[in-house]
Image 1 (cartoon, helix red, strand yellow):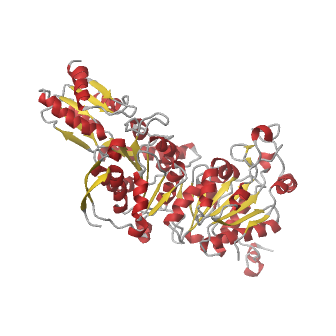
Image 2 (tube, helix red, strand yellow; image 1 turned 180 degrees about the horizontal axis):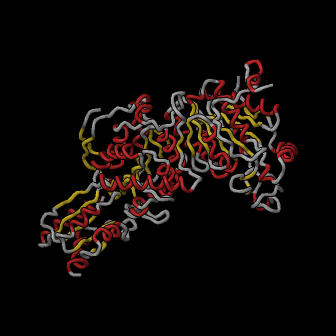
Image 3 (cartoon, rainbow over the protein chains, first blue to last red; image 1 turned 180 degrees about the vertical axis):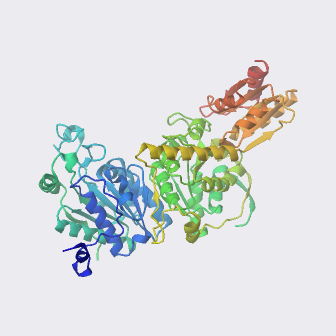
Length: 255
Length: 361
């Protein structure tokens, strides 16, 4: 088959959304960020929202999300994305506003901003990538690092006696009345990608209905930080992360 | 609302002016001695008056980042706090300066360091004029000396902020914030429409239509050459501001043999000190910097052709005096006099300091 045949409509099974740029992703091969970016942009395109969306990038591996997401974007200080998103959304209530944050950003330095934006029920969507480690700074312990899990700042494993327990912030957020939808998903298999995309779609739909904060956690891998191959890291994630961070909807709006 | 004469506290005048200047949003957190700002705004229901959003944030950190988001989407927004709260905002202010966003920030200064005191002070001069947060940046700093200026500088602050795409700080103090004076409140200005934002601020992140490339608001440049270029651009902007935006007031300088340099409430007290000194036959005038950045370097330098000595009067241990000395460059003696830690100098103390440190010195 030559190129001309491949691009014929009847042969086209997949097309990259124009709301992802053509820039080469800065993420490590095997990392879940690229998929999480893509399905977020696909959802915004499918819902017809992308041209009226403002995205807020965090500090962490996805600090450069604006290089890849082909929409208007702001880059926030570490942990402050929910406050920045609040500022945008309060001034532009009919625009779609989302944050895309990692676990260090959202669940450590940004805990106050996360909890309070959710508690106010800001009409924003928070996409939370939890890989249990600080990827960008070189694999330090995160608030979500599992007990006994090794990182560069817990080289002998996370000792919960001295380093505290991992924080299930998603369950915490689900308690708040301002939050209408909370789901935890993964993107390491096609089946999980479909489910994660469905959750993100629900989150944005509820935002357009002004139902309060919607929150989707994606439990992901960090093969570089975990010092594993991509395949090993996905297996380790299933065996260790999923029991502690079980997948599924945690809070759905009452019908 | 038409133009009207009112009797107001400085903090209230700032809040009323914020509504009338056509602000889209205020984000704040209570702290003494400026809590009247958010109290006044909440009581006034600005959303019903003009559509202006007022939100009490969970912290000063959150409030300044809300300002970042609103400003990055082309809105006229402002925040206010007092010294310890402004310290918390410094991270956000640095990002706002780096990302070149327009906004107005009020600091009603109280005594420090640390939790300090709730009494008035001018000890945040260094923080306001030399950067404050991390990195090479400057704020435009306006120093009100009256309740009238607390109101007027909101409007002027927005004009400067949008002209240069840079944050503007109004550096007030507990005296100006808390005292009541008459103020001629300017008439209500319209808020800028969404369509006007799209047209006037092509950089604003308000959703990317097909017709243009995406807008990105960031202060990040991982490549050092790129970051250096951005810094050179910022420095050129600050240079332009230094050349074009100096504002200064001269009081009784024409025949002056000595001069006070003072801003804000110290400048008010110096006016009384001038009367006392002149009754004693000492010809002293006052140069009041209205902009602290840009500092009136040339104006102070020019003054050395006429006066024999300069007393820098501040409610600090001596901060602005360094800028005065740099401008004077040894041509005439420069000394500092200040009360601090929440104390306010009396006019008599100032005259005594002039006599002892400058005339007798």
